[in-house]
Image 1 (spheres, rainbow, N blue to C red):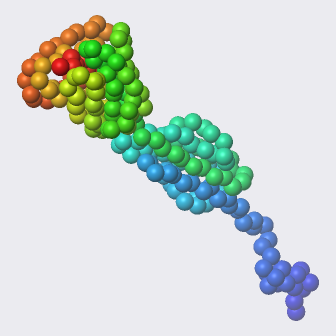
Image 2 (cartoon, rainbow, N blue to C red):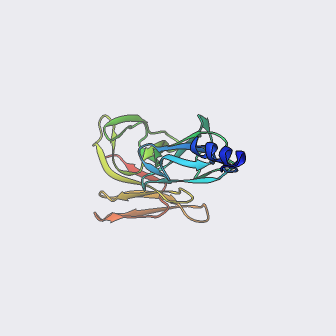
Image 3 (cartoon, one colour):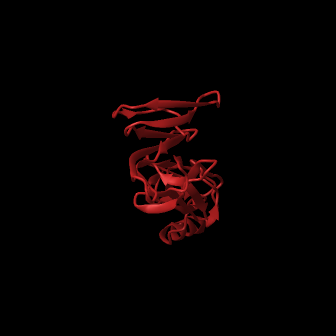
Length: 212
């Protein structure tokens, strides 16, 4: 004969009611990355309530992390974002931007028109170099134009080193011109070379060319 207590337990089990057991809640953290990098883990990541989860952001070689948004709020260019004691759903998004450097150039005479990759970028200055910033790293064609003078064209490689992002520029030589660069002691040295081979100076900052 079934006792009332045993009958009650049987009814609860058949109804799918657990006794003393509660299912843990889970939440979703949606992680996405834009062009130029990745985020790990990515996609819809399931996280248990009260648990923690770390997300790692990586940029590709020619990019850097631009910003990380968590639930629409900017966290800056973070490389790791941690969620702890998770109590709700979240969204994390990473964006990236191309690494850039700068080109510093002067001419004799000054007031020559500067073109970078065919785009007008200003005129050289009489007393100081013309500095063009935010140039994507890689090879670029630099041209100087001035009426009554021969057009000067040069291939320039802009490089940015990690982690200090020190700009390095390689200037292939073209006939005879003077190359000015700052050394490690922040002093300025000039070097004139007449050969036609490419010359690389790790800390090159400016190139000076006399228009003829």
